[in-house]
Amino acid sequence: MKRRFIAISLAFIVPTVLVVTLLHFHYLRSERLRLIDRQIEAAASVVLSSNMTALDLEDIDEMDEYFHDLLGSLRANKILLLRNKNGLVIFQSRNAEWLPDNPPEVTSWQTIEAEGHQIRLFGVAIPQIGKTLQIGMVLDEELSYWRSLDTRFTGFIFLISVIVLGVAWGLATLLLKPLNDLTGYLSALSNRMEREDFEKGEIPELKAFVQASGSDEFAKLLTEVNRYNRNVRQMFARFRGWTAQLAHQIKTPLTVMRNSLEMHETLLKRGGTLPQDVFALPLNEIDGLSNTITGFLEWASFVNTPPETKIYAVHLKEVAEALVNRMRGLCPERELVLTAEEREPIFADPQHVEWVLQNLLTNAIDYSPKGSRIEVEIRGPRIVVRDRGPGIPDTVMKRLGEPFNQGANATSISHGLGLAWVVSVCRQNDWKMDVRHTNPGTEFEVTIPSKG
Image 1 (cartoon, helix red, strand yellow):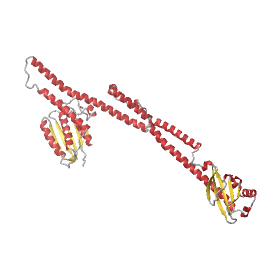
Image 2 (cartoon, rainbow, N blue to C red):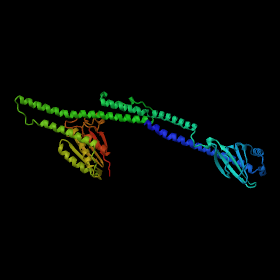
Image 3 (cartoon, rainbow, N blue to C red):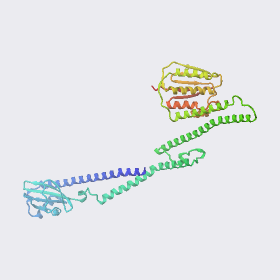
Image 4 (cartoon, rainbow, N blue to C red):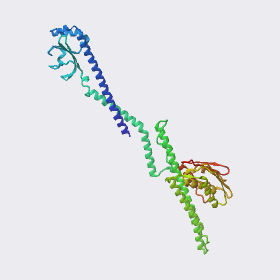
């Protein structure tokens, strides 16, 4: 990036300086030529407005003195020629040696080259006396050959290039130093991750490696990277927690099954007989373990690769009535009460609606005491499930939506995936979920905005 920055600086600034310099030279040359032409025209105008009979002088010295007196300061550096009607030169000033042996006869502007110099000539015919007057000036080399890159000009461009290179290098070093520090941090972090030598498994803060203050762009970038870093560390900690909880969910039924089998094996060695329900407990534990693993895999698959959402017109009252009636048969010890008004249908994925309502009901049933009342209320596009359980602890509320996030009063059949499903489905569909303590109990409210 530093090389690109320097290359861009050179590619932009050096040609710009070159073009500006050449335009400056061109402007100066044009202005100086215009000034010289005005001086020549002024000298010619003075001669033409003078006594024309004086131009008949035959003595060259007298003629030269005449022009000197006539032109005054305009005479300086001027080349003068006077031709007869046949075009022959009858007078030329002493500095006419700059002209070639046979200078061209001109009656307008012309630039000629002689002995490595350029001469600007202006000619005007004088019909009153049958002669032609030519006035010119020798141009200096800088003005004549402005297209040539002399030593001074080349040195100027070289100096500008060196200055630009130094400034670009310094700016690139200053501006890109934070990025180099950031690269160094990421490299060190990657090396630590490859060596797996994190202390307590945590990723270090970025500010320990890169220092920045103020409100410039890099400080803002550093703030966002630090925030991203914290989120990664939180996800890393959650992943470890999920792994530990999943291991616990798997280990507990395996331990129960092992203890049951060892007990039955001991009973057989002592000559006893196995009870008829010898396989009931292991099979129940296997079913529970299978449900836990299956539920976690399905939830993880939904979160990582959500299926395509299929939008249909859904009547929440009908979905709630069918689900509540089915759940009543599965939990006769709780009272399920449904209050629903007939409203216009909403547009959503019916499978997602049923998942949310079913998991909210299942969660309420698992955490409600026997004989308690569970209320389901449908208010327009909102689903409300209210129970009379012990409520959600603050520790669980802070991690709401994570798998295996259970309170101390969780039942043996609960695996902590119900609310994870609800939160994940709401996030995918941009549904709003509110949780309130009703003391006693908890109220969940899910608002489903229509997508139609």
